[in-house]
Amino acid sequence: MISQIKKYSLAIVFALFVIASFIFNYNPGLDIFNKFSDFLLTMLKFLPAVFILIGLFETWVDREIIEKHLGEESNLIAYGWSILLAGTTVGGLYIAFPIAYAIYKTGASLRIVFTYVGAAAVARIPMTLFEASFVGLKFTLIRLLTTIPLIIISSILLEKYLEGKGFQVQSPEEN
Image (cartoon, rainbow, N blue to C red):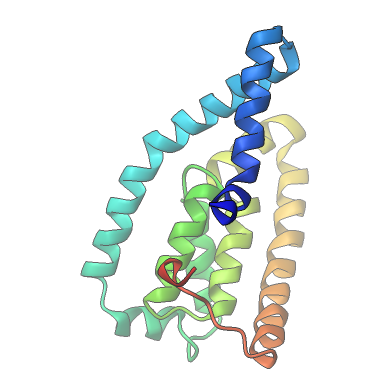
């Protein structure tokens, strides 16, 4: 019982805070609850479709194809594939992480997965177009031409570091 309370302590504190905000009409707490509920509804709209697509991806795409194009023996084109996939990811990082796990599980190397997550954070097409409309195309291109190589370099270094430490990705069932 105590371990369950510890496990969900953050959610319990949040729920108590929201209840207190409603009782005492505490506006910042009500705003936090409204933003949380909006975000939750957005996630609930996207996630079922994403998980269905991930399931289809895992079923339809052969492991050999992923290993050939995104695996340990892949070449520089793998980074291009990873960045292209990340650019078309809709919904933010809460969609990108399940996709990253799916491509890793089907044979992609860690460096390609890290490149995908990094590129999904900074180079999604809708976000990039929105940015270009505000700060200009020149700034956006300079930012992309700077961040993409840094993401690739950091992905390679992070993979080497983690492999040196004997890191293994755990499946969600193991946690």
